Image (cartoon, rainbow over all chains, first blue to last red; front, side, top):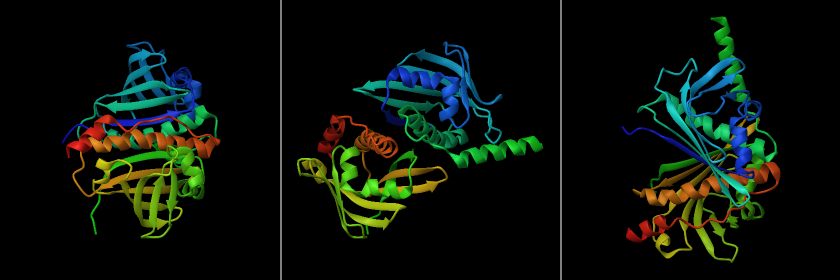
Length: 160
Length: 163
């Protein structure tokens, strides 16, 4: 069984600078990442976290930050339903194409049969669709079913 | 009947009604804005003709409707006609699936093949679909499509020649 890896490409009517800023800004990320926000000082070697309020959803380490072209961090899911798998690697490549941006997201380093891989394969297209809507200033996506799932998970945790 | 196996899928979420996504897929006024200038001509019933026509009038893609269930599912056979080597390839099956979710629509494109298609041919879809879907999403959400000029990948054309 070969190691799975994930690649997603999306084109955005924006600039590389705005795309990079939105990927790394806590307040902006909260709007397009369905209430989750990124937290880091974005220096190579610094910690990275994806948080929902104060709760960490994912943690990692910044591997590379080269604004506005490239951003890479390790990624360890802390979601309770996820098995404790090894950290994986997320890389964003931002390429200007005329007055638009080609954004490529690569996520690799999964073990064969990874449950995290299944989860992120659904998660990235949703997050990146929302990210594009956010930057283009059109109707911003709401993922009500996702918000509902998160709410149920939090309720279940609160009862424990 | 030919048996097609799914080889590639592309997913995008759009803040629009399923009916609007359906219209954008099946109406030439929409497709020529987001699909590299191509106009769709489609007879929306199983067995109906399906064509994507280039701005200069040449046929780019030709096929038949395999399944039509508005506004949820459209499946068409797909043969690229504008290039001689590609015209000789077995046709593939392209499926547009529209899932209405709360607050958004998930559009899934699946390319299915009846033969052991080389990765270099799938690479053509990997280049094209993300741009088509990004542009379709922009068009429906903001009224402005994404326009990027794109040539078919040289590696793909060379791989087809070698078949």
